[in-house]
Amino acid sequence: MRLIQITPTLSQNDAIFNEVCAVSEIFESEVIKCVVYAENIAKSALSSGLEIRKIETLSASDDDIILYHHSIGCKSAEIFSNLSAKRKVLYYHNITPPEFFDSNPPLQKLCRLGRSQLPMLCSAADSIAASSEYNSNELRELTRKPVTTVPIYFNAEKFLSVAPDFETVRNLSGGNYKNILFVGRIAPNKCQHNIIKIFALIKRYISKNARLFLVGTDVGNESYLSKLKAMCYAFKLDGVYFTGSVDISRLAAFYKCADVFLSMSEHEGFGVPLLEASAHGVPIVAFGCEGVENTLADSGIILKTNDLRAFAEAVWLAASSEKVRRYLISKQYERLKAFDKNETVGRLKNVLFGF
Amino acid sequence: MKAEENGSFAARQNSPVNIQQIMDEIYRRIEARGYSLEELKAIENAYSVSDSRPLGERLGSSLSRLPAISRVEYWWNMDDELDGKIKLTVKKIFRKGTYFYFKHVFDQQNDFNKTSSAAIKCLAEFCSGLELEKKRLEKRILVLEKKLSQDVKSK
Image (cartoon, rainbow over all chains, first blue to last red; front, top):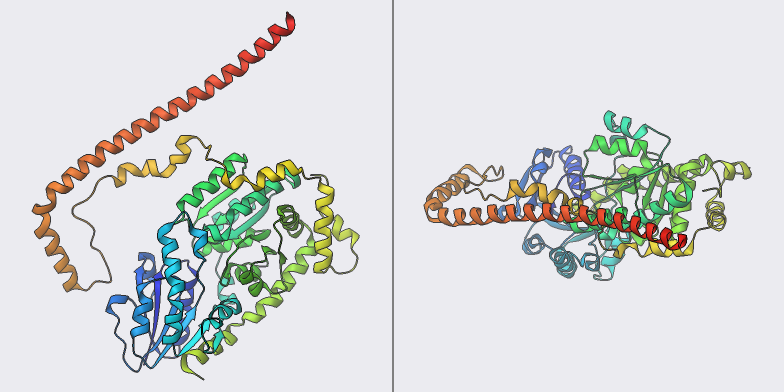
């Protein structure tokens, strides 16, 4: 028996890539052979130690279990639907609504395709899972089959064991600055433009001693990045840093030095960086979109308003009031317990093997 | 920047904080801060601003990448680690076999790319010069306007 994972794209520093790695690691330790098939494979992914193959070469036997990670439209969805295997499992990570990508028609098309493939995938799958309750509810509207919520596997101990990059920590620790952090792809649905607006308010009305770090790749969204930079220029803002994609030790350094994590995402399927920030003891201020609310529950400061002043004040309060920081961090630690890795593995086994 | 400084919130609250108190404090600070509604509106609408960065900054990495990507290499890279040895050999044979057939197309394309990138670079330099000149003239206008208003006042 093999566990075959299929994903449209494999690229390092991506939440689905990390999930694929984690699933392989869990089941290989139980002596189940794991193979990953993908349509687009980034070179960086090849050094991960996974057994990776191109989707065109996929052949499954009646003894194999197939786990399909769905996050965007692709031909793998059709291949998965037509395969015969012992058990076919759909794992839905959500798809960004196409409206967010008006300036990127090819991506918009893929998002649309991904959503249109959902009914086909649901009917082809023997078992259906989704990474958050929000995602599960979306599928429940499409199918009568039971949908199980299996959160993204988050190993807090392993994540915290990564030594932060010394050079980055040194650079970020200098001066009496409050460091505001956001981690996530540069993308319109992540609303970095609103983060910049809030940062502009902080700089103008609250304190000059603030810095903003936007960590994440801009690949595929270069025009949006250009717009963000134009905004910074128009505001005459200094202290905004676009870091691009960073490795795990630099990421740890950013979390270590952050005073507050600010998320303005208007669409999130799950929100792994929220868990990462919580594990690192960084207080979170976030716009209350459904996916974010699902992940944070009653932890962090969640604001469901368009009033940017409220965010600016919340960010500064969370960054500078020790009492508020302590309260938020303790609530976030408490929330992390809901993503206990053993519980997640149990649910995953349940959908994969039916026990 | 004077509305509420660090720690005063904590000092005022003796009991442990809860989310309602945090929310109240946020809205109290908004009231006290004195945000200018005009400026707030300008910031909120800023997403649609036209890109006013200097041309060099706007072109940024694309311009510097131009020389490196303008040449189409006929002997394209084939270090695809996912392909087996047989597939790779077939690909290499195909590449060699079609070399004479496609060479003139690639030469033509490279010639075009070389000329266009040189022209783009030249235009970018020319625009940067114009931008500097525009700034210099704007400064000059300001000085002259100041001088003119002083002359008018003295008369």
